[in-house]
Length: 170
Ligand code: GDP
Ligand code: MG
Image (cartoon, rainbow, N blue to C red):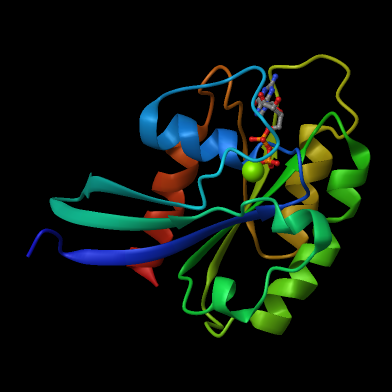
């Protein structure tokens, strides 16, 4: 076999928060400042070596459907890990995290799915959501939390590693 484990991971959150950029950084170590709102990538695979095991990650992005809030059950089905992103420079994207949690509750078939709340774009000044606020919200909602920048690489690899460790331990 090419791998010991196959995990399905989703990335969700409002349009423009940096979901596709996070996947592009994680998978290809690239970043586009003028990233088109849709880069046409809606599925990527990534191999990872963790604790002596070879993991194959199936990473599901959206091709812009999140704009119309039309992600449905087939997108969520069977996901072991869900990365829920907001943009710390856009308060509204943090306020909408509750909406995305409702979607997960409605559509996710896996009650044990691991949720990681991601505060992206921490490289930018003029942040509208503090680290503490994000962290406290995540804690209250039993989600993991990390600050990331797809631009500088901060937290990107760690975000996926922590989700994968938690899945392996669950
Ligand atoms: P998506 O709609 O959630 O997939 O968001 P995109 O990945 O398309 O990113 C939207 C815009 O934000 C693009 O112009 C990206 O270059 C930019 N962007 C994404 N992540 C970051 C980041 O961490 N820092 C900065 N400064 N810009 C980012
Ligand atoms: Mg996108």
